[in-house]
Structure formats: structure tokens, C-alpha cells
Length: 319
Image (cartoon, rainbow, N blue to C red; front, side, top):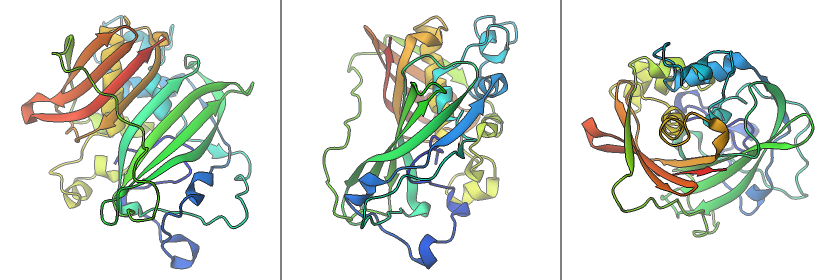
């Protein structure tokens, strides 16, 4: 499971770190439509050049210190920010005020912590990410879709960043597949449709080799789920070894767009979204396929050695 951006109305944790059920030991279901009222307290965070560079290193930038096109992402001289760094830069956010009051009679929803999977992620940048700053993030649940009893639910959360002037900087939208929470009576249709990539052959394909220790480095950005670091936990989850964070793979697909489409100019990227479809094993080589259609860049990612598609329905929109 990949961690979600800071500030979601529902917080999900690693399966072996799930807390005791809240509210006196009672496991709460999803209450609909009450869940659509759930919001987080404003959360303030600050990041700087070290955080920006650590993220770039975590998705594989800078392995060749003589590569002067990647160096600005990992060196404070003329520093650049990978757009998908927005998924981790708020990881240290702290509440800066009380949670919003819920309507009278509101029933608090909670999902089964043990049965969640990060389904999709989208980052929209209303202005290019600065290399440092202090921001406030506020999250809310914007959708809950019922797949039926025993079939799970899809929960869509949105987090909005604002700067110290109160201006919008970024909107992060993530969907979570809650496998244990179907049958709550919400709508079965209406969830956002995934982007459909072209049926023609890719216009470009590029390979990125991951390293065996990639997840150990990437986790320092804030997602310390032991599924990505502890062999015993990984085996209990059904994997032979720890897997790479889905959001790391997501960041690698953004690298592909930076490298192949926009000449390493992150300011050209307005949004980047994708659906997670299979795990990457650290050491895998990821092939990113790209399709160019004006300002829309479609992409998918696969591991050819295992015949596995790991990212589907990808779309980058350029400014």
C-alpha cells in the first residue's frame, strides 16, 4: 500500500500497524452520505531544499553526478522540483487548528485499516512548486462508491495546499480501494473514469532501472510502511521481498515525462495522474510508454521481465 498525501479525511496505515478500533473498540462502518462531510483540520508544514533533493534521489535522479540535466534536481544550485514531490512534501504536516465542526447528527465513518489499497493518484499544480516554503493543507472526502457486499468500496479524498498568502498551490486527489467496506448503501456508479490511453503503439518508450535498495531510500520521504523495508512483513503480505512504494513508481513516470517530453522543465507540467495496477520489486527495470497528443501526454509503465503492467491510465497535462 502506498501512503497518501498529508491531510486526508481518512487516515490509512500499514496492515501490521493498525491501531485498536476507535470509539471504545467499536469498528465503524462507512455512513453515507455523512462521509462526504468529513474534513481534516488545517495542517501546516514547511519543506526546504533537502526535502526536494531527497525526493529526487528517491525516484532515481542524480545517479550519474556528471549528468547536468538531472543535477539541478539533486543539487541546491538552481534547484528544480519534480512535480510529483507534492505527494510527500507535506508528510510532516501538523494540525494548526481544530477540525471543522460536523453537521448535527453526523455519523463518523471509518474503514477497515487492514484491507486498503491505494488505487489512483493525481497531482494538480496551480502554480509551479517552489523549492521551499510554508503551506497549509486541508483535506476532505469527495466521493464514496459502493461496489457491493464483499466487493469493497472506492473512497476519493482531496487535499488542497495553500501558501502563506492563502493562494492555492496544489490539489492532490487520491482514491483508495477499501476491500473490506462494500455494502454501505452508497452509489455504485459515478466514480471518476480512468484516462484511456491511445490504442496505437507508444510514441516513445524509456527504461529506468531501479536499485535493490530503492525502497529503503524512498521511505525516508515519509512512508515508513514496513511492507517496503521488512522482509518478514513482506512475506506475511504474500511477497518474496519488500516491494517498492507505488508513489515511487508514480514519481518515476513523471521523470519519464520530464526527460522525454519537456526537456527537464518541471514548470511545464500542470498535472500528473495514474492508476496503480501491480507492485514493482526493487531492482526491476521499469519501462514507461508515452503517447503525445498536444498538451496531453498519456503513459503506462511495465516491467518487461515479469510481463507486468505496474501503472495504467496515466495522463500528464502540460501548461
